[in-house]
Amino acid sequence: MPAAVRTAEHAGPPREIVEPPALLVSGVRRAFGPLQALDGVDLSLATGEWTALLGPNGAGKTTLMRIVAGLLREDAGIVSAFGRGRPGARDLGFVPQRIALHDTLTAREHLELHCDLVGVARADRAERVAWALDFSQLGERADDLVGRYSGGMQRRLNLAVSVLHRPRLLLLDEPTEGVDPQARAAIWRMIGELRATGTTILHATHLIEEAESLVDSVVIIDHGRVVARGEAATLASDLGIPRYELQARPRSGGGPDFTPPIGTWDGRAVRVPLADLGDELASAITVLESIPGGVEGVRLREASLEEAFLRLTGRELRE
Image 1 (cartoon, rainbow, N blue to C red):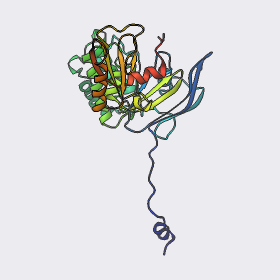
Image 2 (tube, rainbow, N blue to C red; image 1 turned 45 degrees about the vertical axis):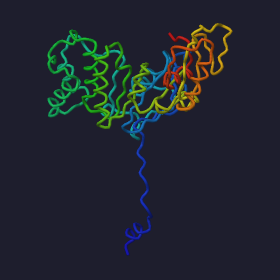
Image 3 (cartoon, rainbow, N blue to C red; image 1 turned 90 degrees about the vertical axis):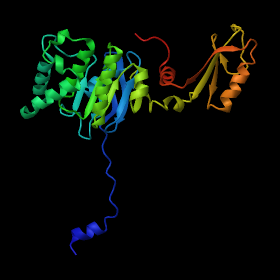
Image 4 (cartoon, rainbow, N blue to C red; image 1 turned 60 degrees about the vertical axis):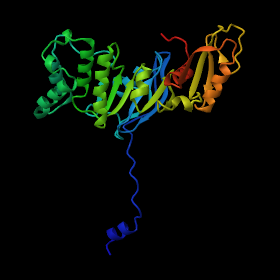
């Protein structure tokens, strides 16, 4: 029997092929003089994953995004995409925080110019430009100067320009900065369409409510380090934050020496942590109603990503 056949017969069950991460950041450090902007960042994204990068001002979000995009060089560490080293121009789309458009060009001219920059084949350019105009809902304004566009329109074009070449990895740095709710919803619709095609997305944002409702996972970075990583819906409970909190104000107004029969008093409301609802909630309300004069303004809050974020990064202002 040929050796090749014998090898196949005795090879055993096929081994599972492990797909390399779409983005791998390992031990990345970057300093600007005495300021250590990134201090050993580790991060891995699976193909098709949509991850939000959260952090206070100065935490290192934009520095990390610029390093992954190749606009800055790390002092130490490794950045690779799809198991092939640093992401190349064909694999990568980058939407910067500042709108990178020219007021004296039209949307169509921007898109045609970018086809040249990212190497879209000439035979595909008309289709790509038409797709981008439809994708951004700018077809009727395609030949207007961008300087006449609203901020939301410019943001949509900025995104469309960055994904003309159908990148597999998309970096978004505050993509909805300064736009109204309607424009924000349109931009997230566009990003959702990209995600549905398998694009891997990492976006830096300070809008925690969007991270809670849109993404698969959250990375919280502070002082140049990743301090937490997980699903937005479970990150709070993973940190030991009670799943629910019952809040109520004493009708008597409380006072500096007021001690509630249950929970804690913050000077404005009694706060009672709850692991679950049902009997525990009913029991807590009964105890609170025993406060002389009763309570008012009762509300139930579910543990949020914002609470996890503040616990990890603090409540002081960052400039």
